[in-house]
Image (tube, rainbow, N blue to C red):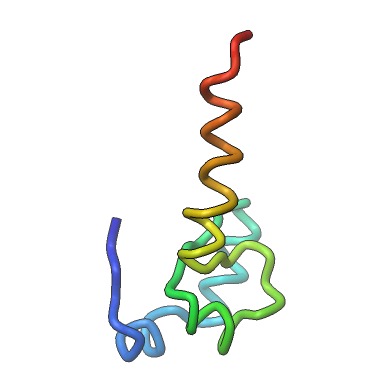
Length: 67
């Protein structure tokens, strides 16, 4: 896992990269302000809070569910 400062993310995370990741069905987890300010409508970009508080518990429940 790599975390970047907001300034680094401004330079590194471009709309083109997000589109490319989306085409490959890859999700990107970013700091909440970056999600909110730069990628509010992109469904393959998630803020840390949503990922760790909503998505990860949901996924974890599936991993631990009996077959």
